[in-house]
Image 1: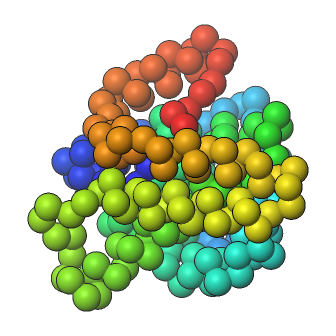
Image 2 (image 1 turned 60 degrees about the horizontal axis):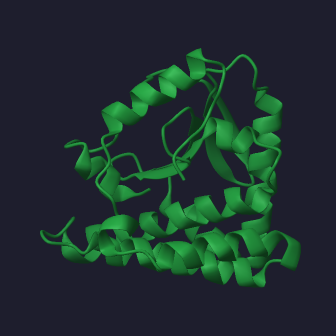
Length: 207
């Protein structure tokens, strides 16, 4: 999910449901805002996974990592109905709390998601500098595929055991139609379902 998410909501940034500034840290030179609303998730395990993910980007896609350091003001970790988003008004990459807490996957899908949103941040910065902002009629499916191709490239340079899930997901996404790759989502409904899942003791975010 992307910079277009905010435009679908009709606001500069999506409503993440909280204004709590939470815990602030520096992780590999990037400011991190952790807003942990889940008592069953330890701050430490989330920050360790984030560090692991950023380490993968820094090692295997160092140019992308330098872009990320320049193009975003911070990474924010909090509960949200999608695993990642770019908030253009704040120049913040959002990474979903429970996604970072998962241990049934490696750090590679997390890294891939952050890299994806970093590409949106770079596109946003280019548009702001060169085009004066977001142009009318911008092709968001094209932008989304640009991010997926960056994920695919990332997956291909990772060790095989880490890269395969990233490659599979990126290839599947690249095969989708324009409407599927950049869907219109009812984020109010998605938030309601997320809150219901939390009340029921389950968790899950959109992929």
